[in-house]
Image: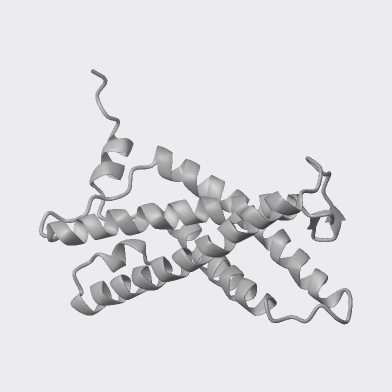
Length: 186
């Protein structure tokens, strides 16, 4: 069996996340909360005058693609860099809740841009990445557009609730000063 390198050993026993993990966490946190807010807000934009609604939807899609790429980067970083272990003093139910919450967060981070992209790619309109139309991957399908749009919307609700629970848990750990929240602070 190969001996762990000092660097890998440090990653496994460190009480803090890496700088890259912290930067990706906060960049994605801000971007995803903005996207969720924008998605809710866009639902109230009237379809007339023509163009205004499409501009905001195209902006949302462009930001979603950028965030999707950052999510892939974060996922690759996470797969190659073990997070710090939770303290042994943490109650079992909190450990389970933390792992479940993080699994839901990662699941939603993958599903949101994926279902958004698929829903948009089955419309009759091209996806525009900051104004540049992307090539069409397949023919428009109203039925598939509806399926993926419904999944995108349902996932957004799960995501918002999970983010709210995550934030409340972080605030609780900050109030308790147990060092858990400090692991992700710059």
